[in-house]
Length: 150
Length: 150
Length: 150
Length: 150
Image 1 (cartoon, rainbow over the protein chains, first blue to last red):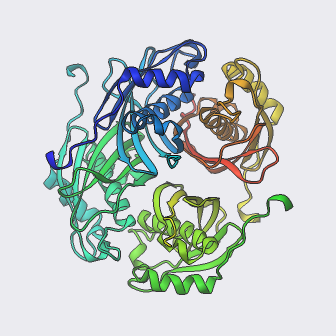
Image 2: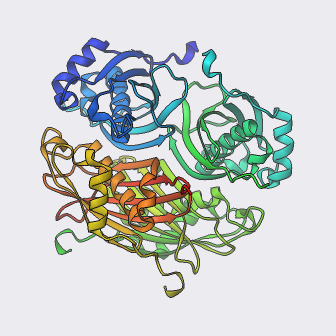
Image 3: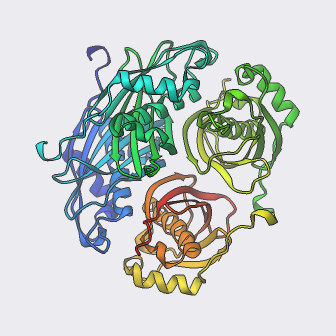
């Protein structure tokens, strides 16, 4: 699609993780469990390392843990494309469908940005259990991007 | 992904359109404007032929017309995979994000089923204006599938 | 709640209807079927007069007709409080739950604004069939308010 | 509305809290922070006691903490009306709008059930900071209720 080439990320995975560590230390409260794995044109992939504090009885990853992974995933996608200025982007809406009980193990989130505007960004997140093709959850989120201060 | 091969449609495009004509004549009230273009494993593609009654001043396709296209698209995806028994499936939730003003012209919806259960099905729909790579809207819908009568 | 008295509408029902007739004649395409009944502090109530073109087989009001009523209802609530400048407000997200099949007859929508910001407004809409206490549908919508031109 | 009197809760606040303690001890991981305050016809009210682990820099309650409060609140409403059999109810969809940054202090959630069916229940949740009339968040959730085992 040469005419409408997708925007490229402006930050690397390492740069994003450094920024996250500084800006959101609470994400790693109790041990680092969210890893950025890859960013690409309008996409981001993160991994939630299964940890006792994310689990429900029976070993399934909790709803709030999946909510957080989807939310952070889309937000990282925005950050990767807009750069550190968008650290202040805040979630205004998030709609999540829980599709299946996730089995034991890590959860992967594949995010795709649907819109990357000046004031609003919208992205979707599909969550998979590692090694399974069927999604365990799917979310769509909207983020308000504060005007850059000058 | 050989172990978890995606389900295949059990109805052809022609069979679906014949069924739609019988079951939902009101969809074509005022002239046929929604066409099923393709079905595939867990997917369906439909086209909304731009018609005066879907337009807002300025020539943009209306929100309710996009809502209807997304809703019918996911529902056709379910029908294609579950067969005529699921004609009675009803929308229980639909979340739609309007991303850009669609320009003049037809709107294409690409649907992907996220879950195809016995009682609930969930799908997502991405709407494009023909010839453009940027989506104009995105929706996620949940459908309740009535138990088969015996 | 004296400290946080709710904002009052700045337009009357008659003023709103006049504005709607001018700005959205297509809403009344085929006969006037949406009536504004009341506006109050952060609220609006509209009525959809049941008309053949909103019905599905069996006489139930269609999903797209309920979507439109919820969307117009919240938008009217914003208009009533922000005045004609917000005619340009556009829906960015709408999430609707269909709860019961509406019986024959008019549908009433009760809207409540949850946030009335400078750039974003959020409202919810509960839809009832006239004479019934149980809602037939419920929606939440977000609207982007363009910056006033100067 | 005598003809359609709203369903009454079948469990008391104390009975619900006892059940929650047994069934969801992880809710109180790190100290009890969610309290059921009241249940009524199709309603439930809960309180999140502000605790360091729910906070973001600046002292604001985090998005995931508000998501959890809304989710637990609607689920408690279902439990209060359906009884212990519905302990197995699971969230299938949750749509949340973040409206304002909550200030320091407890967050109250007022839940209202919109539908209480045999297979599906739908409720809405409005979150307030204690002492403020303006909601900080609003959510709508759908819950699948497993068939009772016999």
